[in-house]
Length: 66
Image (cartoon, rainbow, N blue to C red; front, top):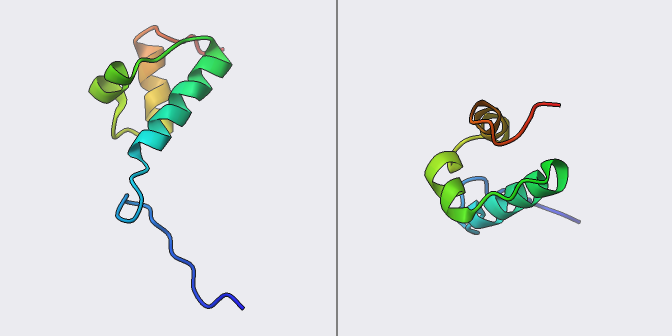
């Protein structure tokens, strides 16, 4: 029987920042054919929600809103 479940949403137990960034960059490459470099992600996108990241990439003209 499961008595408890632990959610780590802030990177206290596991540093998920890099995992999320890599997953986001892979998804953008797969869906839009655009490669986002780690340095670019760190400088312009880090800390934003996925929705805000997409909005920023559209505003910058890096991806096209289909």
